Structure formats: structure tokens, C-alpha cells
Image (cartoon, rainbow, N blue to C red):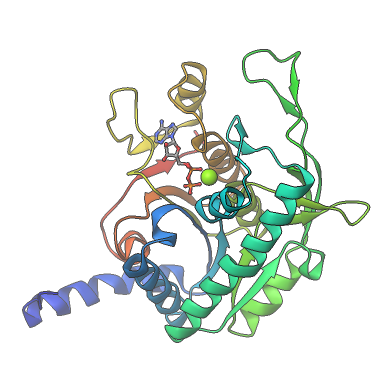
Length: 293
Ligand code: ADP
Ligand code: MG
């Protein structure tokens, strides 16, 4: 790492002041996913950012994904993951794998990383504190509304009770949430992490929702980065098929959050080290900002 001249360093630190003042005491929901979750250097940078935010008085809430890790275990068990409209088809065996991997390994790895960086992280699933109630998702076909897909135990969020998150925040802890919900009969549901992050941001009336992904942001058909998206433009991109796969629930969730009072919603490149600090505490902007209108 090159060391900048002292005057540059001072300028960079001073630049953060107005942002720290503006965001002090505010909640930021961070969806952690993609490459930022698998590359050790990026993992470390992420954990440092989360701890730094907490130390300057911002309340980060982390919601994590785990697609690659789930895929890895499924493969070892001789199963192949299948997706419909961006959602993982979840049979009972896949549900077990999802719970093991997310609530076990992945969540505890993140908790460990944040603690190592000097924070106090606490891992939760949607079951803890009765946080995320869900029911089976009814998935309507995106082109033929009369058709429905059965994606198994994929959950649709019924209600979010954020009291456990608030209690932890008040006590200086950093919540790390696995996207698993529970149903009426105590059954488990696999919920897309972007959907959980978006809903939680809305319920907490977060200042920001930041979704870290494995790509620069939302791209148009030619592969150019779209730095800002409005609801209307999103409808067009859905209709012409520019947005597909995992970007579908991500953008749908992001737009919901933007329309429901979350001040700013960003889809950012998790491959950029310290993207959280850069986006939140400097004048620089990364990725795609989602606007409600
Ligand atoms: P994560 O949830 O970890 O961020 P996903 O694979 O679920 O990752 O979603 C991101 C992926 O969505 C991208 O890697 C890309 O393959 C896909 N995608 C589909 N349409 C677009 C688009 N228009 N712009 C950017 N990525 C897109
Ligand atoms: Mg995804």
C-alpha cells in the first residue's frame, strides 16, 4: 500500500466529517454478498468498514447471502441448484443445506471477521426474536401471469419485527442476519437475502440500503453502468429482459425500499475494497443508485 502525503491524508479524513455528522445515529442496512464474501482481502476490508461505521456512531445492520457457499455444499452432496426467476428452488433437502450453510458457517464467519476487526457482532436468523415471519412464495411467471412456479420452501415475508435488532443496536452490537424466516407451523423458509435486506431497511426506516454485489452495478444491454435508475426505467429494463437472474429480486427489493422511505438505496460493486467507506463517507459515488421517482 502506498502512503499518501500527510496533506492528502488530512484532506481525506476531513472530507468524512460532514458525512459522519449527517449519518450519526442513523441505521444503514448492508446486504453482504458476491465476491466481497469469498475473497479474504475483501472480507477483511468489509469487516473493517462495518466496525469503523459503528465507531463513528452509525448503526450498520448486515444481512448476508451465501449463494456460492450453498452451491458448494449442494455439489458435494451430488445435488444441482436450480433457479427460477432469480430464486433458488428449495426442496426439503436443499432447505437443510441452506440452514446449515447460512446460519452455521457463513454467518459465524462474518461474526468472527467483524469481531476480529474490533466490533461486537451478533449472529441471528429470522427466527431469533421472532424477527421474520414468512409463508410460501407464490411465484407468478414473469411473462405469463396465468402461470405459477413451485419453488418449494422459498419464503415470502409476511411481517418483520425489528425489536431484537433495535435492542442489539442500542447495546453497541452489530447484528448479522441470515435470511431465513419461519412460518405458521414453525417451518423454515429460504428467503432471498436482497429481499430481507430491503424489507428490514424499510421497517427500520434506514437512512441507507447498500447492496454489495459481484458486478459494477446495474448494466444496460450494451454493458454500460447505469448510475441512476428510476421506477419507470426499471419497468422498461424488466420488460425488455435487460435485468435477469439475481438482479431481479435485488432491484425489486431496492425499489420497494426507495419507495417506502429509505433515503438512499445503492447497488454497489463488492469487488472494490472499502466500497462502504468510500460510498458512505466520501464524495465519491459507486454503482447504481435506485430512485423512487
Ligand atoms: P448477489 O446476490 O450475491 O449480488 P446475484 O448473482 O444474485 O449475486 O446477482 C448479481 C448478478 O445478476 C450479476 O452477477 C449478473 O450476472 C446478474 N444480472 C442480470 N441482469 C443484470 C444487469 N442488467 N446488470 C447487472 N447484473 C445483472
Ligand atoms: Mg442474489
